[in-house]
Length: 235
Length: 213
Image (cartoon, rainbow over all chains, first blue to last red):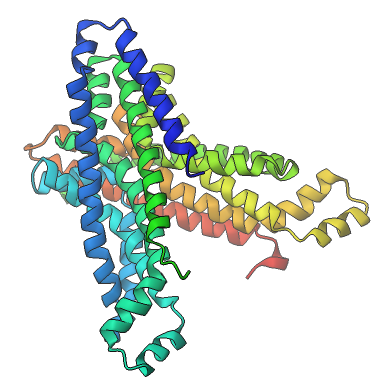
């Protein structure tokens, strides 16, 4: 299951390249499907996804840690509840409302993506840390470790598999939602579909859809790889 | 805002019902498809790996991409929206239905055979009722997800509240742009909450008394 996805994605992409080079395209299609344009859109899409993913991890993991410590512990169900409720809002509505409120462009799209992708990582960070056996924490304290080193050397390593599962879920959500960034002028492969719809060219719609799907599968695979690589050796 | 809503209340109610209608019909069809597939999968165990892989791939493919793929086949409008929503709605229900049906205790199946039930009766009276709570949990997930997908499908003129979001976007800078987008977004959240409540109620009514928590 770890070798197959990139091979399949590669094969289908190779098929796309062959089609692009040999197909009989009209002038509109060939200008919209020029390779520099295609690479720009792919790059934008990847950039949106990864910038948002980095921000999600940088925000959600510390927040999750804070919500399992001391007095804040009691606020955890409330915060997760709010985040859960927020997930019910349609992604496209969130993207458009933020753009109307702030501005069109890259950073607004990133903000919408971060808001949308934060829940799985936050929830899994809290679940992962709560799942650590309390006797292990106690043992660490008994060995003279400070609270911080117990967190860094016992709790977090044990919670990493659960946290990374959340990161993978977030990556899938983000790469999908990034295809809506085109509505607010932030580019990405969704632009190929919207251009295809406005110019009524099936080749553009299908190319855009295909490339988004391939990218999503590849990023999901990357998430799984990351999950395996970050798993601490002992567990 | 209030003025905006009261001025257009008829139209908003109509679109809300359209949204609910699209999603509920799609999820209902998806439930039938998913349960039928799950019954097939549990009979032929070799299929279960394949089904898992396919549903994982399906859930990874972004909905806007599927809409783009469907357009050449189904055209602009409600058909594309319906197919896209149904496709995604099947996946969580299928996963749960397989888990639910496989989770039925083998000894119960044997007992039902011993009581003289045919395989079909045993499916209908033993396996499905026992798996139903798990299946219904899948239906709830599907319903929530479908609300958002129906909103995206409004870009290709699918019915429902998503259209307001895109109207708001198109009228950017106009007096009502934000009103449109808010009505669309909040409307969908409300429909989603109500649909979830309805499903909870359906659970109360349809989950067999013997296994009700």
